[in-house]
Image: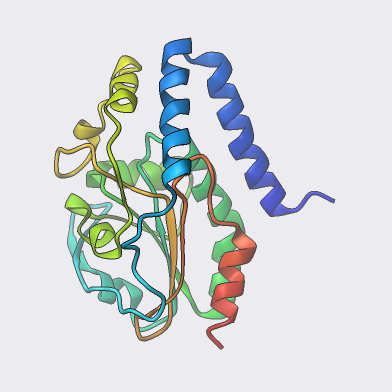
Length: 221
């Protein structure tokens, strides 16, 4: 039987395989080298530890209003999903899967789901609308929250050049005008805002499994 996670994993694999056949060879090679380097380096050493409290930072709603993380969490358990941007096909696959599989389960558990990226608010709105997301989507200008968590990915000049060859300039999408991106990461917070689970994916073509997220939420008690 095919599970929901099999479906997301299969979609991510198909998205990667499709890019290998559709993109120019030199672009594919640059992206592959970037992924290999990220895989080899692994998660950064400074990733926030389980038990630490997440800072209450300013974030921007998809409508352009300033809000605070703790206000959005509202004293409930929360799942924070850090993604690269609406321009990232792997992010869109994951966000769509989380909408289908996580939202109903988290509602039953009294937990909230929030997706966070460094892009401008209109990018958040695009991600929300194109994937028909009913959960909150926020912008983290300058990767302030991502930086506090230690999950900012290193920039690869060759990968950035390959993106530009495809007409994608991440600096035009990011709220701070840089190309800095977070590693795809899921953070589960307890009702007091302490980290109970953090899963960082250096390889941006993979994502945290829904079953692992729900297990972490259930472990909160």
